[in-house]
Length: 238
Image 1 (cartoon, rainbow, N blue to C red):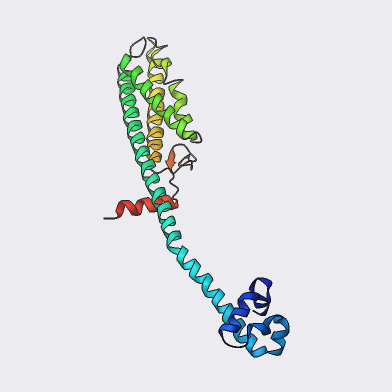
Image 2 (cartoon, rainbow, N blue to C red):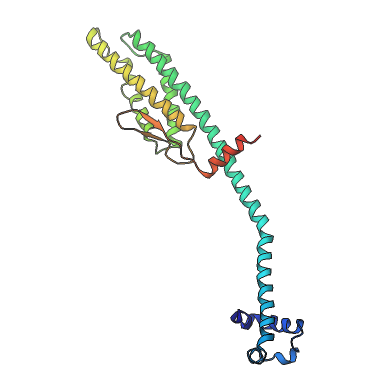
């Protein structure tokens, strides 16, 4: 405290405190260090008053800024919550479109395999495949690190692609085996795409929300953030 009061920046205020407390005249304060030695009690009173005044001024300044900081934090949190709600709504819409597309393709593919004929796949199957590919491409553009999306796209360009309607012959055994294999691929594709659709409803930003699990298949993993917590609270508020 003594160092604070005798600092060059505080000496004028210390002199004012001495005069205000009627400890001494200003004319006696030309050399404060010397005056302090001659009047230790007076110095202590004036220095204590100055120090407490400075502390109170600092606290008051922070108190005046506190409402602004609180309001700013609330505004930022509200913005993040609104952004997350919007992100989740768009993710759910994209997930719904993806479910519709994979269900349509699975049904068309199943009908095609049950009534297989030599020749190209019917136009409805081709249309359903194109729609599903476009939906998955959209998800991949938004979430390039989701490896399951790439896994789902691969058969659509291979065994479940245009080749699905080609290469059929009259050999019953070969055709039966191929139908079985394609049906399994079709079911696996549906499961993977439905997992991706579920992940779209919980994903936040660029966090990994879908991962493959050992032994085949996949599961969705949601990672909560402050924004997500605030968004949930906002949705539950009356």
